[in-house]
Length: 163
Image 1 (cartoon, rainbow, N blue to C red):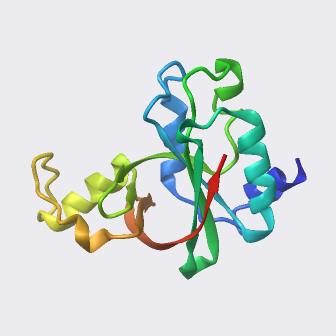
Image 2 (image 1 turned 45 degrees about the vertical axis):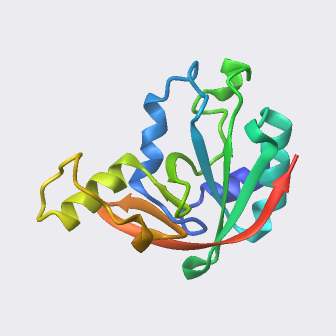
């Protein structure tokens, strides 16, 4: 468990406001919830061991992406709804985990906060849920917010874990 202690130190990790989103997560409705956990290369194997031993993973795949700009790694995965709810409270999820959405055709991961900030940026400061976004501009990117600012992290597939 020492890895989780290291990962909680902000000087090792990209810190974003979006980590606060999990506090309101309804644990009983986990289907189609995509989790995104940040780690270092040194912590990657321990994180993967923790995820695969703690949860039933939907689709039997974990995608590991590399963020070159800050030399971080991101694991994305869906957790089966049948997991023990007590192990899935906010404390039970791995450190540095956020819930994201994905645009499959462009491999764009984003939080709702980031989507709102992106729309505001593109639409003169106005959030409009019907505003069209050209997702091609955000291909292979994680969109997050930090201090109410939009952050765009370019990703590349590091490996795909088949379970």
